[in-house]
Structure formats: C-alpha cells, structure tokens
Amino acid sequence: MRVLLIISGGIAAYKSLELIRGLRRHGAQVRPILTKGGAQFVTPLSVSALAQEKVYDDLFSLTDESEIGHIRLARETDLVVVAPATADILAKMANGIADDLATTALLATDRPILVAPAMNSRMWAQASTMRNMELLKANGVMTVGPAHGELAEGEIGIGRMAEPADILAAIEAALGGPLIGVRALVTSGPTHEPIDPVRYIANRSSGKQGHAIAGACARLGAAVTLVSGPSNEADPPGVETVHVETARDMLDACLQALPVDVAICAAAVSDWRPAEAETQKIKKGRRTNATSPNLELVENPDILATLGARENDRPRLVIGFAAETDDVVAYAAAKLASKGCDWILANDVSPHTGTFGGDDNKVHLISRTADAPRIEEWPEASKVEVAARLAERIAETLGSAA
Ligand code: C5P
Image 1 (cartoon, protein in one colour):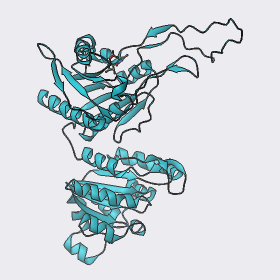
Image 2 (cartoon, helix red, strand yellow; image 1 turned 120 degrees about the vertical axis):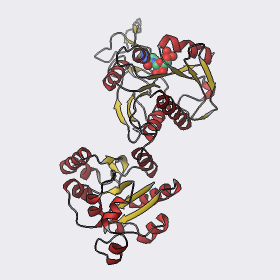
Image 3 (cartoon, helix red, strand yellow; image 1 turned 90 degrees about the vertical axis):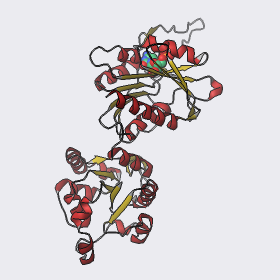
Image 4 (cartoon, protein in one colour; image 1 turned 45 degrees about the vertical axis):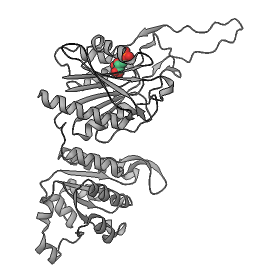
C-alpha cells in the first residue's frame, strides 16, 4: 500500500505524525508532502524520520524534479490523503488551483483522494467551505471527519480532525476490502417510546455492539447505513448514520435504506409502546385518592421479521441478535424460524455477564441449514472483535454466494 500524505497547515498536523506511524505499522509506504503552512506545525525532520522517506515540499526543486517530478509523485501511489486538510487547501482543490507542490500533485493525480478536514467550527460551517466540500464530494473525493469536540481555541464544535485510527480505517476502506460493492444495513441502540413529552420507555442497550458492526463492515469496504436509536456512541467513520427515536421511525429508516445485500439487526427495539403518547406532561394527581395513570401498551413492528419477510427486496443475508437471560441457544434457534432470518447471534444478557453497556460479548452464531440449525460457539471477545469476526463471516458468505 502506497500513500501520498499531504500535511497542510493546521494545528492537527501533530496527529498526522501518529497517522504516519499507524500507516507504517500497517506496512504502508508513506511519501509525505509538507506544505509551507504544515511546516509551521511539524518539522520536516519528524515527518521524514517517521515516514522513513524524504519530505517533499518544493515544487521547483531541481533535485526533486530530476529525481521524482510532481507528476510521478502524484501517480506513484495508491491513494492521496490530505490530513489535516485546511479550509484553504480544500478551496484550492475544489477550484483546481495549483500554486505549490501539494496542490499541483492533487491536480495531477489520477488516484483516489481522501481528505481529513480540520479547522475552526465557524470556518467549517461557512457557506463557502460547505460549497467546496459539495464540489469535492461530487468529484469523488472521499472524506473522513471532521469530528465534534474541543478545538484548538478552547471552543467546542465540529472541526476537529478525525483521530488517526479513524483516518486509518477510512484509508483501509478506500483501498478496498472483501465487502466492496456490498450494501449493508445495521440497526443499533435502544428505542425510546414516548409516554408523554418528557417520559419514555427504553432499555439498557448502549449501541456498542451495533456501532462496532457498522464500523467493521465499512472497514471491509461495505457501503453501510446505520440506523441508530439514542446512543452515546459516536457515529462510526465512513458510515451513513440515521438517528431515530422510536421503533416505528427505525422501521421507516430501514425500509428507506433498502435494497441492501445484508441486514444486521443489533438494535434492542422496544417490543411495546404506549398506545397513545400524551401531548402534555402527565401530572401527578394532587388529590389523596388520585389514581396512577394506567399505561396501555401496544406491540411495536418487528423490524427483523419485517426485513426477513420482504418479497422482492429481501436482503440476501438477514442477521438478528437474540439477547436472552436463560436457555440462550435454544431460544435463539427457535427465533431463527420465527423471525425468518438466516443467522442469529445469541448472547447472554443476564446482569452478571455485564453485556449490556459493557465492552465484551460472548456469542453463539446459529445459522439456518437444510437440516437442524448449526450452532457455533465464539470465544468471549471485545464487541469490536466480535464485530470484525462477523464482518469477515459476512464477506466469506456473500463472496461465496456471488
Ligand atoms: O424478539 P427479540 O427482541 O428477542 O428479537 C431480537 C432480535 O429481533 C434482534 O435482532 C432485534 O434487533 C430484532 N427486533 C427487531 N424489532 C423488534 C424487536 C426485535 O428488529 N420490534
């Protein structure tokens, strides 16, 4: 893997040193271009020491031009990454301006380009920046971030460069993986079913497992739509995330995402919702004999079963979770049939397991076969590892079915 890494002038440039280390650890060859602005934040010496490559910074250097010209620099790579990408370099890229080595290489390249924007949140929100980003996206430039968080000036907002690990994941996805060309739909998190404008019915799902699955599929190259109920998890990089509250909204968003090749329903959808959500807050009775409100519940749509039963656009692989507290495998096997899905990942969510909200998961994969369901026990692992293993299994299965 060869990466031409352009470091432009932003405070986030220090994170690009970490990115170079990550790329080198992955065995990538990194050729760095440091803009004049970039060199105000990191030194050519640190960049070159980490990349174990010469740093290119001068368009008209006679030695460079004789050794390796900007055209070769732009083409002898698998991917061009601009990290950090300032508002200035994005504007130049969007408008075809080539006034230094970095922008000339960007104009000359015929390779895919990934940008990691980094700037103050007001600069990011500016109409001109948004317009430039639209132009770049329309030209096929890929983006990772920017993220929400603390900015250099002590402000909080959108504009932080994506973390090096997220940029690495986006690079891996951009360079292709076994799920390239595969569309995946993932549900994650709990749902909130309103009782009145301030109260709702929910559950303890954190969204960690579902979000990890969406990220793992994207890393292998899938185009992923994640439909997430309320969760504290960050939107995974490179994934289109749709935020919903209720089961009915989740179902609508899932149907909107069809057709897909694989659907993974990891959300803990509330089975019931209050029949009628009050439009005003229900008041506690002040009279001594005041009765407590009676909640009438009605059943929510079953998203997994709905996707499994689609006639014309049923995903080729429909995967559900079975979170049980007893007889986990037996219940899960029964669920395969009742939900019309192909695989079930069964996990024990008894309080002692710490699965809900925790970082680890112990699952059984139960798959449908012509005869009895096949049961596979997976070792206890982090939710991220379970997600990676599942994404690989999906790739093998869809690949061999193609
Ligand atoms: O029936 P149960 O809730 O145990 O089934 C769990 C599986 O079904 C999970 O994959 C969950 O995402 C899915 N499900 C759903 N819609 C519901 C209830 C569950 O998609 N209303």
